[in-house]
Image (cartoon, rainbow, N blue to C red; front, side):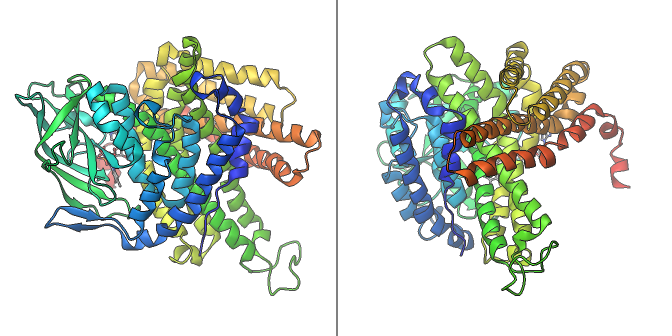
Amino acid sequence: MPSYTAPLRDMQFVFDEVLDAYATLQTLPSQREFGHDLGGAILEEAAKLAANVLAPVNGPGDKQGCQYDPATHSVTTPDGFKQAYQQFAQGGWTALACSPDFGGQGLPHVLNMMVEEMVCSANLSLGMYPGLTHGAINALTAHGTPEQQQAYLPKLISGEWTGTMCLTEPQCGTDLGLIRTRAVPQADGSYAISGTKIWITGGEHDLVDNIVHLVLAKLPDAPDSVKGISLFLVPKFLHDGSRNPAFCGGLEHKMGIKGSATCVMNFEGAKGWLIGEANKGLKCMFTMMNSARLMVGLQGLGIAENAYQISLGFAKERLQSRALSGPKAADKPADPIIVHPDVRRMLLRQKVVIEGCRALAYYTGLHQDVAHDHEDPAVREQADDIVQLLTPVVKAFLTDEGSTCANEGLQVLGGAGFTEDWGIEQLVRDCRITRIYEGTNGIQALDLVGRKLGLGGGRAVRHFFAMLETWLKANPEAPHTAAVTKALKQLQAATMWIATEGMKDPEQAGAASVPYLRLFALTTLAWLWSRMAYVAQQKLDAGSSETTFYGAKLKSADFYMARVLTETDGLLAEIKAGKATLMAFSEEEFAV
Ligand SMILES: Cc1cc2nc3c(=O)[nH]c(=O)nc-3n(C[C@H](O)[C@H](O)[C@H](O)COP(=O)(O)OP(=O)(O)OC[C@H]3O[C@@H](n4cnc5c(N)ncnc54)[C@H](O)[C@@H]3O)c2cc1C
């Protein structure tokens, strides 16, 4: 049976050797004490938890799924989930990067991301319960009243309770202005919440005693658009222990993440309290969604890593045909399939994309810590610009590539991949949703071109490009600087094209958005691969004994530049082709 081993050496390489993250974190007042010993020990413990506690219930959880009992509106999670969740919470993993003011450990966000990657590799379905709770914690920390924070944060942070995000309704997914759930003010200062939400992750389950729903709803006099949305806190059980009428009306039967309860939620005049200001709910939601989007990116990365491990293990064992250059395992009836160029292509594409995505995710996560905690407001602003700019890129690219890698991994296994024996078909199914929820990847691309490029009048993207240019100038001897320079010029040309054409006609920006996000991601990965190869080169030059590890980094960078980055030529051409070929079709012409 497949097993998962956390890629600790690669994580440490990116975090410590490439990003020099300990040094950066120690400049922050909250992280002065955070060093190699503590970071390393936490990651090792997380790796054990992922492999020994979360992974074993992943496959069985997929087969069993969640069960709904209409008589009690209750949901039972798969066997073993409750025990695994309890071990997770009791080990303090829900509290890792949360505020010490409410019982959190105050450790770096980027460390939490690394743990999250392992959790998602091992068991995405189970990871969803604490994952969504994190969004609720962030929203309450940023926008809750002191009373709300005292009442709810300690138990959410300890994992004693979980949280949800209740946005989606049958008529309203991407366009939250269409929300119909109503909030009617009550004499005691609370609100009566009525309406139906669908596809609510962890809306009901048996892992904990209480569930805290964060619900988007409209006040009676609210404007009929996104400007009329408010956010409410609606607990399953009230302070006096009475049951709030927020009931699960059923479970979705879905393609993947079957151990994650995806619920219809009926709010039947449930008691709720306003979070933040009336009609400013979208702002609060974005607090939840921005960090949740980074976390969904990590789901794609985590699944890709697991798929890679399974396909690599298979490729070393499966014997089929002889190598084109002559037998490699002459004592066996055939060679292992890892000798074949096409199998190598599939494996190596996974490997270099995963390692590049890992660098991109941790790079963004590190800036999240700097943006929160640095003493200098100018440094905080620059770091926040990077986080904002890269959040849609991390969400969309890592999940698109997570899906592609899982599919490539399955292909390596041939027919065995399509069977349930190897667990990789589950990964393909589980990963598919990551491209859809938390804003579809198409919407992430619109966010990048529509909001993030314009951030601070273009300040964020100008600073990002300038930083890459500065690095290239300062490190001319780094491997592959010519390839990175070429990609950066293409990205700058595409940015200029969108700025001019999109300004005249927003449909041009809409048409360019998805290839633009990809071009952005591939270019950023090229820069990170150049940095990783440079570090590897320096280590080898200094006589490191880890010649296999660092040698593989150099070869991986070569592979990335020669076989992955080449896509940028086509993407730039597609962007510049503009909207004409998309918009020329009449609706009738689609059907003939
Ligand atoms: C398993 C699962 C778990 C979920 N968990 C939660 C949860 O916990 N809480 C919650 O509130 N929701 C949850 N959702 C809902 C999820 O966030 C939505 O599915 C997602 O936001 C997309 O909305 P939609 O499905 O209604 O698609 P639609 O909004 O109907 O979009 C359909 C298609 O049209 C495209 N589209 C829409 N508008 C535009 C536009 N302006 N420009 C370009 N393209 C556009 C989209 O990209 C998409 O491809 C979950 C869904 C699933 C399946």
